[in-house]
Structures are given as structure tokens and as C-alpha cells.
Image 1 (tube, rainbow, N blue to C red):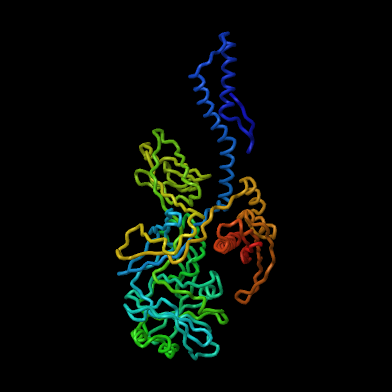
Image 2 (cartoon, helix red, strand yellow):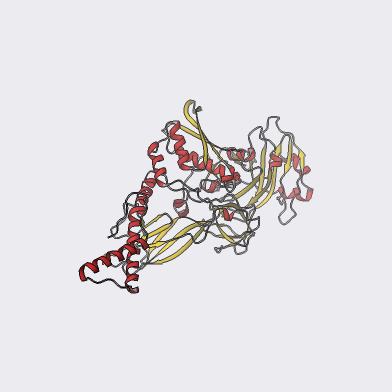
Length: 571
């Protein structure tokens, strides 16, 4: 039997070399036993080549695939799962809503790029579509009220033109956003609201995230029960929550169990209201604080539309927030962010012996597998991951590693094996889905009850990127062993950052002390430097990388020890 050298990364003989050695061994054995010389035989040559190919695969599996598979398992066990591709994100808005309806997370929207290629998008969060109209929107700033385009004060009337008027409030009154909506009986429950601000991540966007949102009561007053605060949710979307509520996670979100959508470039612009209790579904006329400015802002025929009770809310911004009126570009209703992800279902047959099926998921360059949503056998039983320890005896198993999906068929009590399995895979197109122009997404893949509803993206898609290229598994494993999955020293932080993001060129760690709850807390400020040219869309990707890196390091820090992260672009 031919032999090869052992050890990870050593060179093994290919099938041709093994076949040639098999032929030589055969010729020697024939000469020694029968005293005759072997003659050329095409059938025998084919047999030797087929046998050599099988032997070569065994050596490759034992010498290369198996050791790397062990390292992959160790990396996963240490909590360093491979970084996935990043989906492109946009903001979609639905119009022509005739009745209230929940928009499911698995609703698929189809968009066409300039090249003519089609891409699929799914909403980052579930909203309630409702027949809601914007009646008034304005910004108070430095003693003046400035209206925002897009409001229609009278139902069926013309859109109001941008205007400004003087308004005398307290000299120390901060900038504020005032909005009035004509809503159905469901009030603001589940409404998705886009506030388009420039620049992305600027002071106005930051202030909208940190400021309280006040739903005004029947008297037009601010109350504690009507106050909401924003928290970042799936895809970076701002989920508004009442002060007496807690943020809950969705148990039915299969995509979130596979992909951690920590943020996106447009998440900060979309706000989703929580369910509104009956006791808080207030409506009021124009609040007294801004009523004197309405005659100067709107013509008489439009101003009368605000005389009826409407749903009013205001957002006081941080004092000193600059250029609020010029930063807020527009407000859109029934809006939510959507990411370039597509669920593909495939039926994979097993052979008669029930052996492992291997799948190469990436069908084209630039398309990436994000994860396995589910694997179901022919009898409807769910397959378990190879890492699951509580699966029943005879349960089907699946394993994804190195662009290969390996399945092991389930076996029933009678010993019968599944003949096929249904696999649901999650894909994204990375950088290819960037740059879909506004209006390029127009098709709803899943039917909605609102048959007249139309969809369109309001902003170009951006932020999609391929997964970073990592060094060999042995090097990544060595880095993880050095830190022992704990970030304590400056060297630990640097190693953890470089293992997480290979495109980081320089890491600096500075000790910091902060005050929280009247007590001093120690921490680290980790500054990671990158080259913008290494990223497909640096303006969108770097803030997301900063959030991902901060979460990764904080999960590995000592209790009571804070880690802040800043990602800087060199050059």
C-alpha cells in the first residue's frame, strides 16, 4: 500500500502517483509469482485509477480535512464562530394600506439592480401596516417652527409646502420635533416610522435615539404614562418602549437564531412603536404650545384640517443639537428597514445506503450562505445539529463546515432510514446587493391581505459585504488559546481584536474610568485602526463593525469592567 507523510499541512500523493505505484507493485508481484511480464491492459489501468482515487480521498480526509475539522470544532466551542457576510440594507415603505395587518418577518421583497440582476430582501423587524396619514410635521428650533415636507393636513388635500414662522417659547426650550397623525382605532400600535436625517449617524440621529418620545394626552400635555424610550433592536432598528415595559425577544424569529443582525446603516432612521393600551390611545387638537404658529405655517383651508383631534407626539432633542430643521429631510409611515437575505428550500435525497450527502451551497461567486434555518426529514421530524447533546437516538443530524453541508439520515424505531430531507438555507449577496436605487424594490413576494398595497425602497441599498478572509485555522486557534477567551490585559484585547477582524491594522488600548450610579467603574478604550479601501462600503460597514466588536469584547470582559470600542479609518 502506498504511504504518504503525516502531519497537518504536509503534501500527500495525488491519484496519479498512487495509481502508478499500484501498477508497479502489481507488475513485481506478477513477475515473482508467475514469472511473466505484465502486458498493457486498459481495463486493469482503469481499475487501478479508480482504486487510487478512493485511496487519495481517504488520505486527504485523514491528513487535511479531519485535522482542520477538529480545529473548527475547537474554535466554535471557544465561542469564535466564523464571521459571516453582511447583507445590504435599505428602507422600504408600503402605501395604499386599506386595513390594519401585521407584516411578517418572512415577507420577501424583490429588487432590481442597475445591472438587471434581482435581489431578495426581508424586513428586519415586524410592523403593523395601518391606514395612517401624516397630517403635520415640524421642527421647533431657536424660536422658529419649520414644517417638514410630506404632510397632508386635510384628508385627500394637497401636501403642505415647507414654511417657517416665529414662535415664542421659553428661552431655554430645546429643539423639538412635533408630529400629528390621523390613525385608525389601533392608534400607533406597531407603526413603523422613518425619520430621514442627514448625515447618517449625525447629532440629530443620535439625539432622536437618546431623547424621550412623548405621546400627548387629551389635554395636549406630556405625561409619564405617555413617555417612550428607544432601544436598538434587530438590524439596528429603534424599538420604542413604554417606560414601564421591558424589551422582549421574539421566539418565532428563525433568522435571528442563525444571524445576529446587530446593526445596519439605516437602522437609526426607523422607529417602531409598541402596542398602545386602550387607556393611552389619546387624541387631541393642536397643542397650545405651538398653536400660535399654525396660522402662519399653513393656509386657512389647510389649517382647518388640524382642528379635529389627532394623534400628537413630540420628541424634545438634546439642547445644543445643531441644524435640526435642515437635517430632517422627510418622514415616512409604514416604513421599516429590510436586509438582503433570501430563504431557499431544497430537497436533498439520500442514497440507498443512507450515507452522508454533501452540498456545495454557493451557486455563484459573490453569494454567501448565512446559515441553516432548518432540516426536516421525510416524516416531518426535525434534524438536530451535530453539536446538540439532547437529540434522541436515531435522530437525523446535520453539520455545516467549510462550505459543506453534511447530512446523516434519521432512523425510525424499525430501522428504516429517511430517503430525503428538506433543507431551508439562508443566503445573502454581500456587496452585489449594494446600490439598488430608490424605487428599485417594487415587488412583494408574499401575498398580503392589503391587496392594494405597494412597496418601494426610499433609499439606496448599502452596507453589504463579503466575509473577511481569515488566516489559517491553526493561527486563529493559537490566538484564542493565548487569550483563554478572557479580555483582561491590553495584550488580550489586541489579540482578541485581531482574531475577530483580520483587516485591523493597528490596535491601541487605553485605561479609562467612568461614573455610573454614583460609583467609579474601570474599563478600557480599545481603538482599532483599519484601511477604508479594505471595505466595500466603509461609511456603512465601520459603524457596524464598531458595534459588533464592542459586543464581542464586552462578552469576554471581567464582570464590572467596561470596554468601549472606536474604529478609526486610516488615511
